[in-house]
Image (cartoon, rainbow, N blue to C red; front, side, top):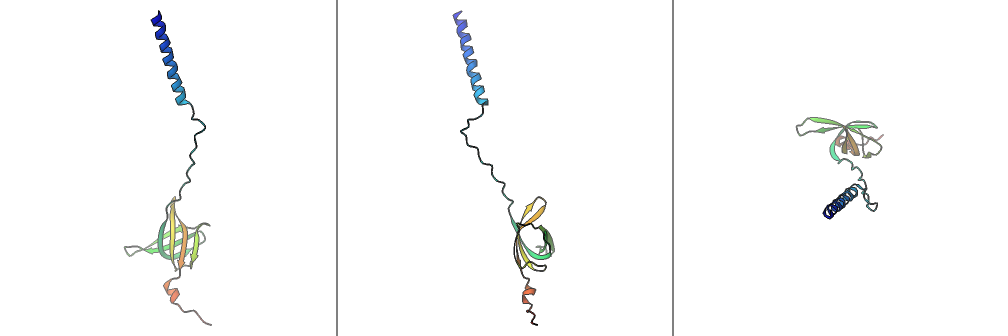
Length: 127
């Protein structure tokens, strides 16, 4: 009888210890843990293109670039209020564009225009 009650006591104690371990494993962590800040989404990396402006509007610019094959390729870049613009931006002028791919669009982040060589060589008209 003593052996039987000793075995039952031991079994009850083992079950109690095991259930305490399960409860502790499921319990939420203590409040003293520090939450990690959510990292801000990094902007897409930018690329650079040099070419000649073929069309310029408030919301987009079209640039022509000579490919290695010798053929001329055109690309359209979207512009927004954050696009930095400097230099001589006009159709026929050279431009350097820093851009990123935004979904299916090429988004210009900065434009730096340079007067074309033919415009620079043209003497000023004196009247």
